[in-house]
Image (cartoon, rainbow over all chains, first blue to last red; front, side, top):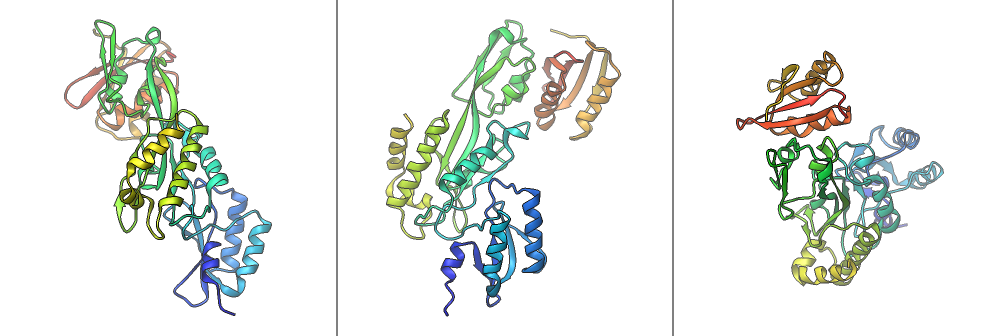
Length: 287
Length: 80
């Protein structure tokens, strides 16, 4: 019987150069895996692979050297222990994320939770070409939002709270955009919103929480880091509601579904059909 | 506006994480409410040391830009 490589690839088994051997990709969300599941990964690699795993460039795990004859057995063992295969090919791929605000002192948003929600809603959705979603907690950008087809970055629109301020000047020196000027003698703070990149360093460092503000999502579209390289572009102001964020993601995937050509990455679709078209659709749904 | 300090530490000759370690050791020697003066480099130290001090309950009360790539901060022990 002929081997259906396409179906195997879709189900996370990627053909190796060695005949009838596959590198099996796991469905990992936000770069996290429970220790108990990792133990099972170890067992499968020992029993069916060559006793090692490969960490992919996008936070997944692959177990190389699975034999064709063992594919079913591996699938069954995985299913029993709650491990799921990843995907390859023209669909939404592994959702990546940094550790976010629940772990990292710099994090502004709960990236782990958002990655899990993205996984539930969008993972493996069929599209004209591969589509990468990534979530990064802040402007330090450990998860490199702009290299994804759609990347999300935590941000904050700072607000100065005069009554708490001691005019120590720390916010001025930590601001990477020189958007804040503290006049110590006159007890004045000038904040130029147009220079602010929503990184939240003023908020995080202020000793007396005299900087607050609303936390939200900055979204980048059309990033590529493969055969071609392009930086994702921000098309909307910061989004404060998760519901609107999902509307934006749905609209983006729908746009790619309608306008994308087979084997054309999203950014190139936008170059061809016009960024303005996506932008106006997004503005409509993010009102 | 000048602030007087009870002790002084220079962390311009070390890198993270020794920067914060040196500050912590210096703070250990002080009583609650006393002031430590810390000289540090621009970039990573000024971004992270004051934030770590906040996390540990010490209050930065004054920041001076020395205009030579260094900053001097005044920290009140357990001030938060």
